[in-house]
Length: 203
Length: 203
DNA sequence: AAACATACAGTCAGAATTGTATGTTTGTAT
DNA sequence: ATACAAACATACAATTCTGACTGTATGTTT
Image (cartoon, rainbow over all chains, first blue to last red; front, side, top):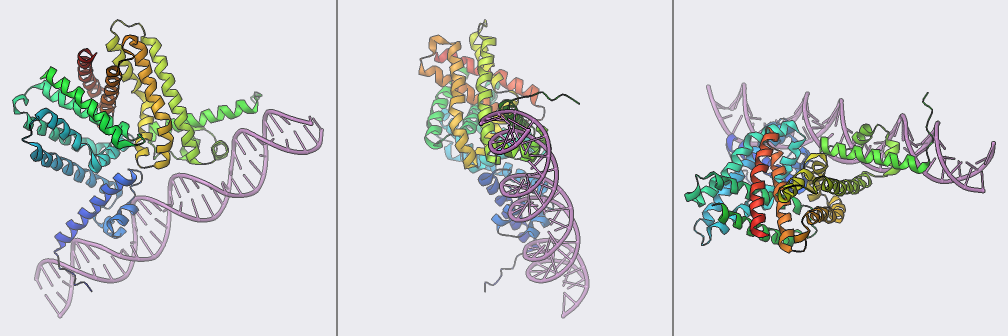
C-alpha cells in the first residue's frame, strides 16, 4: 500500500484542477473540440465524474477555465522562446522562426479548435474574445523586445500581424496535407523569404 | 391539391440529393461540423430520415458527397468571379480582391469546418486530401488567367500561395473578433498593401 | 395492367453525453 | 477526539444521435 502523502485541501484542489485542464487541452488536440466530452476528459485525467463536476459544475465552466489555462500557456511559451533566441546572429530570421515555432505544436492546435468552434458558439466566442487580444499582443510584445529600435513604428506592428496571419494560414491549410511535415517546411521556407523581403522594404 | 408534376426517377433523385447536400453545407456554416447531425440535415432539407438514408446510407457517405459538392461550388465560384473582374484597371489589386472574395462567405466557412475536423478525423482527411489540391489549384489557375505574362514563372505561383495563406490566416483569426466586419476590412487593407509590395518586388 | 424497382416516410433500439443526486473519504477547526 | 466542510466517487435520469427496420407511394418495364 502506498502511504498516501498528506496534502492540504488547496494542494489537492489545485492539482486536480490542473490535471483536468491539461486533460481538456489534450482532448482538444487529439479529438478536436467536438470530441472533447467531459467523459473523455475525466478518463484522460484518470479521475471520476465527481471530481470534474465538483470543480467545474458544467462543461461550459470547464471549457472556460481551459481557455484561460491555454492563454496562460501561450503567453508563457512566447516569453520562454524569447530567451532562447534573444541574441541570435540574424534577428529577422530568428524572429520569424520564433513566430513560426509559437504556432507549431499542440498548444496552437488546441487554440484553433477553440477558434473554429467559437465561430458557431456564442458562449465560447465570448470567453475567447476576452483573452485572445492579450495573447496575440504578447506575441507582438515579444517581437518588439527583439527589435527595440522599431518598437514604436506602426509599420512594424503591421508587419508582425501579417507574419502571424500568413503563418496561421499555412497551418490551417496544412490540416489537409497528405504528408504534412515536408510540405509544411517547404511552404514556410518560401513564405519566410517573402516576409523577409517585406521587412527590408517596410522597415 | 397541387397536381403533382410528373418527374422521372433520375430527376427526383438528383433533386433530392442536391437538397440534402445543400442542407449539409448550410448546417456546416450555421452549426459547424460537430453540429451537422443527420437529424439536423434532414430537418433543414425538409425531408425525412428515409430520404437521406436511401441516397446516403451512412453519415460518412453524406459528408463525403458534401465535400465533393463543396469543391465543385468553390471551383465554379472561382471562375464565375473571374469573368466579373477580367478587364479591371488595376489587375494586381483586382486579383487580390478576387482571392479575398473567394475566401469570404459561407462556402469558405464550410470549408474551414471540414479542414479543422479533418485534422482529427482520418476518414475526413482522406476525402479532403483527394479534392483539395484541385480546388486550390483552380484558384492559381484563375490567377494565371489574369496574368498570362507571368503564368509560367514559379515565383508568381509562390506569390499566389502566400496571398492565399495570408488571407486564410486573417479569416481564421477573425473568428474570435468581437466585431468582425470593420476589423476584417482594416486587416485586409493592410495585408493587401503588403502583398502588393511583395508583387512589385518579386515579379 | 401487372410486376417490379426505386424513392421516400416513420418508428425503434442502442450508444453516448451531460447534469443531478447521493454516498464516501480526507483534511480542518475547535 | 469530534464535528464539519471540502474533495472525490458512484449511480441514475433525460436528451440526442446514428443506424436498422418496416411500410407506403411513385415511377418503369413488359
